[in-house]
Amino acid sequence: MEVQERRNYVQSVEEENQEPLRLSNQDEETKMAPLTAQETELERRETLRTLRLAFVGNVDSGKSSLIGTLIKGDLDDGRGSSRQAIFRHKHEIESGRTSSVATAYLGFDETGEQILSKRAGKLIPWSELAKIAHKRIQLIDLAGHEKYLKTTVFGLTGMQPDVVVVVVGANMGVKRMTKEHLAIAVALEIPIVVALTKIDIAPKNVAKETLATVRQALRRYGKMAMLVKTIGQAVTAAKGIPSNRVTPILPISNVTGDGLENLRRILYETSPSALFKAGLSASTLATTKSMNQEESIAGATPTAGDSKKKTISVSDVIEMPIDETYQVPGVGFILAGTLLTGSFKVNDALQLGPDYNGHFHKVTVRSMESMYMPLKELVPGQTAALAVRSVNKKFVLNRSTFRKGMILLSPEIKVDDYVSQVFEARVVILHHQTTVTVGYQSMVNCRTIRQTAEIISIESNQDVIRTGDRALVRFRFIHAPEFLKKGMRFVFRDGQAKGIGKVVRIIPAEQCEAL
Image (cartoon, rainbow, N blue to C red):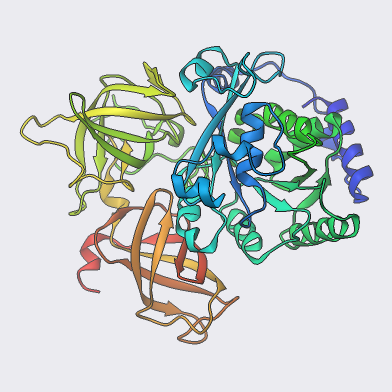
């Protein structure tokens, strides 16, 4: 951003938070340089990709109602009429509570105005919205009840959100599940926005106490809370989101409409390319951080006597975790997921795996579409469904062999360095009623991977770890090997026991047999 914009941004944050920030000499001398070819390409791709936001928070905090109000353009009636546009199942409509992952889309034109149906209360079909929108945003509604925590965790890890919106009911205060959702989002290093809902019915003293508790929780994680009450503050806050330090707090009412325009402005102003450059977008998270950008991927570096081949950088490598599979009559095997890095086109050859034996299979992309629109090329950050077929005509792809949790990769990658059933990680226990020891089994959620793993060794001062403890732990997947990389973050859980970890080493397959 320009020097004057930097000054305005710093000044507004200082006034709001009473915490002085100072520009470095380098910032004072910063001038707008001409866009490089890479920056131009990022801007082109920004218009193609969809910004993804996951909504989390305690049950009854108003997540579904907020999303419904945003996409419909109508206010809620105070009894949850807006959330009907989000619910997928009959029992959700009857109970008023989300139990599954639901998605909705909204779009903005070039002027920043939200595109709404001309018929009040009606939604524009996704396929039509994708054609006319200058900026597309996917809203992911996740469950707030504790018994659906596994669904919420999968949404946070597997659906690759760029930003997490933590919804807090101003009349309810900050509940335990809200704190857990916030802790998981911070652990996964996803930028956060806080929506303080139901301000129309919250007593002033309760709302004030809730706001103070939210500020305290954010301060605990090193976040700078920024209260947003005007459009100007919303624009400023959106520029600070890529820093992953500034956390906007927006007082909102779905009934009166207070604060909704501020949230819409933040959604429009938040730049996917800025998140990409900062390494905080799902398109780069755990990829740029786990490897140096100049480092070549194992197996992609040319060998002696093969100097004609080019070294492939991390940004060129194709990585697309699979979050769903389908078998469509007349079409064949379908994969769905979000492309993290690289790009590919229809008819390109890729490798898919690992299967239950740890092997990858070469496949060809027959067709692909996103939001019901056919695509010729997929770029980082885009979510799409792909029709693929095996290069080996004798091998048939089906759901019994290929599952969500697998990954599509560039054909040049030497996958043996990343596929294993055993890995080491540095972990911290968020909550456990007793102790964690060798032999403890929990569900590991890492990107789209969701598999039970057993702790086979613990390196710490003691042989057990408790709530708040940190340790170097070795895990072994129970059923099949998975694709992992150093630096990838994950969540492991078992009922009410929860922890977070970061992969530090992948144990080669030949060493796993001896363990």
